[in-house]
Length: 255
Image 1 (cartoon, rainbow, N blue to C red):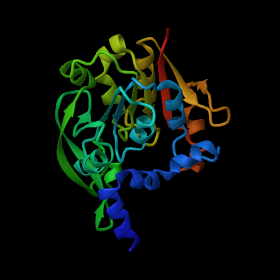
Image 2 (tube, helix red, strand yellow; image 1 turned 180 degrees about the horizontal axis):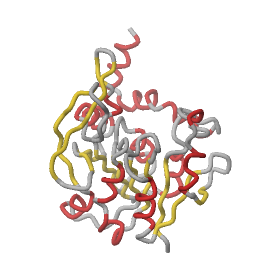
Image 3 (tube, rainbow, N blue to C red; image 1 turned 135 degrees about the vertical axis):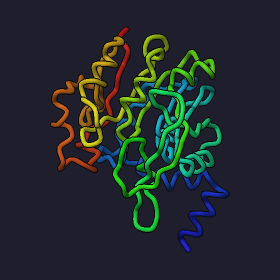
Image 4 (cartoon, helix red, strand yellow; image 1 turned 30 degrees about the vertical axis):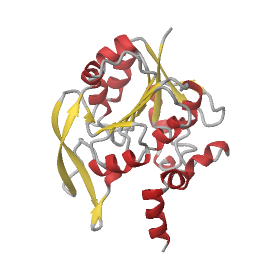
């Protein structure tokens, strides 16, 4: 009965459904986080007329936070998994969600979606190799530079990237954006997912005149980050604990 009611809410009362589905955001005011504390950071950088780009939209938790703030600006998502696109597009009709993967080349690729029991773990799809226990789906890719040129977009305030290990490729397709538009980037980078040298992505972005920070859970402020100490932030015992595990890094252009 409860499942039926939830499905009815999703179909006919999406605002009510969103409040229940994203209830973990209520923890942001408690200091005992049940979701990514970096969502708090959006409150300090997004404005009513901001443009926010969510790469790896998934089910839309970052869209949910952004739409509370942005009224006259733009909210854009990129998500290659069609099931996630359908889900998020229904809940966020004011956002423009592209069924594309952001990568280092515009073209096609394969999305690997892990199998889970008799179904699929849609929220964990990645272009990166995930082994054999997956379903492979052909998808379209685009560089963020190509997309912004096609859309004639000259102003972007914040870009969030969460692409399950494909972030190095995604960033390499942002060279013009790093040089010219210079938004803030929030990038999920994890030692357990990275199949590239961690130093490469940090030094690449810093080379465009960016400083790197993390969101301190105690002070709720940004703190400078030294990527050589990354393992200290991502200990195995911290995994799945939003109060201790830090995997989102914030790149801010120097003045």
